[in-house]
Length: 244
Image (cartoon, rainbow, N blue to C red; front, side, top):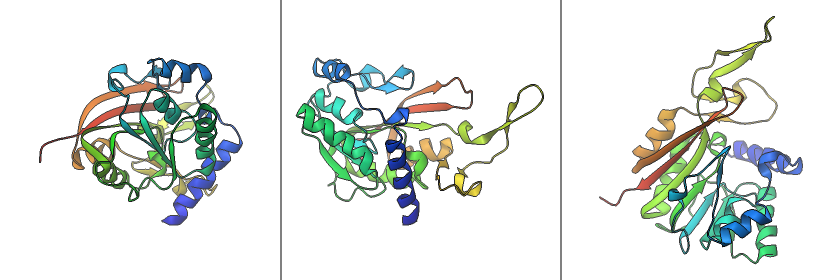
C-alpha cells in the first residue's frame, strides 16, 4: 500500500509545479482580514459557516492534508495555534514560505494522514480537512486517528467529493453528449487507467457512517454543485462526543 501514497505524493507535487488553481495560497487581503477577526474559508463558491469557526483564537488547530499556504496561515493569522500535516513537500513549502514572510508560528509536519502517531491523544481542538480523502483507500483509518487526537468536544470539519463525481461518465452523441451512470461505488481510478493518477471514490456510508462509527456526532452538512452537474462536493462538521 505504501507505493500508493508514494504515487499520490508525486502526483500532488507535480500539480504544485504546474500551479493548478487549487494550489493557490492565501492573499495578503485574506491574511489581513483574518488578523482583523474576519476569518473566511472558502467552500468552492460558498463560505464555511462563520459559526463553525467562531472563537478560534487560542485553539489548537490541525490542518489535515491542509498544506498549500491557504488554511494554515489564515488560522494562524486569526490567532489559532496551528499545525499542518501533508504528504506533499511542495505543498508544505508554500506554508513554510508564508510562515516565514508573515512571521507566523506554524508547525509544519510531513506525513501521511492515516498515521498521526506523532501527535498525542487529545492534542487538538479543531481538525480542518480540505479535499484529500479521495486519495485515501480507507477513510475509516483517518477518522479513527482524528478521533484520538481531538480533545473531547473537539470538532472535525472536512470537505470531500460526493459519490456522483465517480458514478457517471460522459457519453458523446449527436446532440453533444450526456452523463450516464455507469460505475458502482466504491470506485478507484486504477481500475480504469494506468496513467499513474490515483483517486478513490467513496460512498456516503464510508464518509458519514465512518464518522459516526468512529465516535463522532455529525452536526452540520452542506453541499456545493459546480457548473459541471456531476461535480458535487460536500462539507461536514462532526464533534467528538464527551460521553463515554
